[in-house]
Amino acid sequence: MKNVSLLLLPGDGIGPEAVAELSRTIEWFGNHRDINFNITTDELGGAAYDKYGTPLADATLETAKQVDAIVMGSVGGPKWDDVERHLRPEAGLLTLRKELDLFANLRPATCRAALASASSLHEELVSGLDIMILRELTAGVYFGEPRGIETMPDGRRRALDTQVYYEEEIERLMRVGFELASKRNGKVHSVEKANVMESGVFWRQVATRVGKDYPDITLEHMYADNCAMQLVRQPKQFDVIATDNLFGDILSDCAAMLTGSLGMLPSASLGAEIDGKRAALYEPVHGSAPDIAGQGLANPLATILSFAMCLRFSFDLQTDADLLEQAVDHVLAKNIRTADIAAEGVKPVSTSEMGTAILEALDELHAQST
Ligand code: NAD
Image (cartoon, rainbow, N blue to C red; front, side):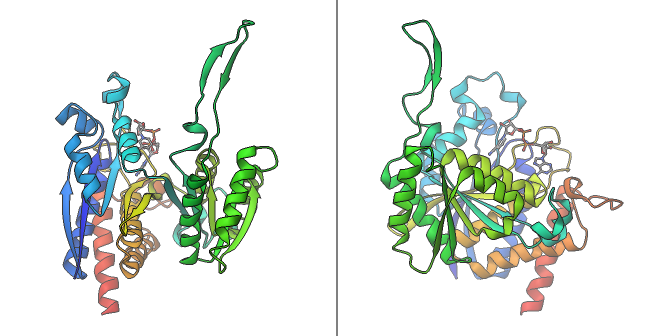
């Protein structure tokens, strides 16, 4: 029996609806597989502001630091538009990421077979697609100093941001990339702009040095602009793409759209490994979708697939992660879809009906395997 501790943070908008379906899924794994989940549920974002007066309470943060992994729904919404910036829902999530030093953002771009026709690219280009975009999340130009908008002595105004990377920040990100590739298809593309940026030259040097520790992994370097082009030209050439904060932001959104809907995209953010334990936060890529909240319209699959990533990366339960991903494919293949991914002429199911369909698929697949 494997014992794991989990903090669930449903958040705002469609977050609680999606996490409710996830909770049923987790319960299924607790009942049918050899896993004992010790679950704490708490508030984050607007819901935490309403309850505690802050988007991330100290006690919640303390729990977040103790548990093996965190799975969240989403935060934000118009209800908190007039709240002071540091108390806004998003501030709670940013603080959580910063406090746990979640520097490695994993965004898989996986094209589920049944949804290949929903991609903006030709089906044959994306069918079977399985890319992992690894984005550095806590440094680079989004955080570098100096930054600002200023007036020069001659009266001209200017704005500046600073791209800065310390060697260790690149090294730890690349190591995650090589380790991921070793469990996948053995290839890493390190992406920068070494042709025009000093930080790109440095990124390439560090990636090359670290790569020598992983002789079984093929390391290729690619300029970010070429990578964007290759992603839409021939996306299946990639396995792991490891890149900085800015390029990762853009490339991961680009790759995401190769796979169809926002309601299907999971993500993970990992911290440094300390004493054999790595802080980890799993969340769907989508936001709190206030336009459809409370109506049973939300697709819970991005949240459920985020939990599959949790099983895989935090708990090293590969078979269970595979089982959950297969259950999702099984349901989609039966044309059971929420409105955002519904096939033409097929009546969409509600959020909870989708949750039920996942449980039934798990039952079915589990029965076949035992
Ligand atoms: P969004 O992702 O919430 O919604 C974009 C569109 O996609 C909407 O039309 C929505 O209905 C649809 N959509 C999103 N997820 C869906 C799902 N699971 N099922 C079906 N349809 C889905 O982005 P937005 O509208 O720009 O932002 C809304 C709020 O979410 C804002 O407050 C924003 O700050 C916040 N947000 C939070 C996160 C996060 O929690 N990590 C991420 C992005 C945005």
